Image (tube, rainbow, N blue to C red):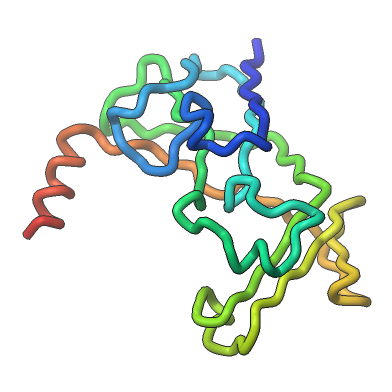
Length: 167
């Protein structure tokens, strides 16, 4: 049996909190239970939770609500797993969207110190390549990655981290 987790990606995570989260915490309720060996098909949100589209301009990129960044699908409960267990996840495939973007802003990110003005590249993703009219002649071979996959800390580990950070 395959579990399918899908949602309307045009609805922000804050308006549909039962579809995901944006931090690792053991108190966040799981959205589904997975039995070891079971297959799961999961939709994911983009890094900025759908704030930018193929029609967005650099003005929208400058106005991004950064606190909406890093939305995660889940969490999932793994039947029989206990704190301290090693969990192995095998990714069978990743299907990228047909659109992507790159944003560089002054003072932010890897190129922020080099930027005098914000710049946005709109990518069309097809046939295993990303191409953009914003960067004529550039074609990037696709190597999609899932992004982030992890396990929430146990209550005990969270307490240790919280105590350490307070000190």
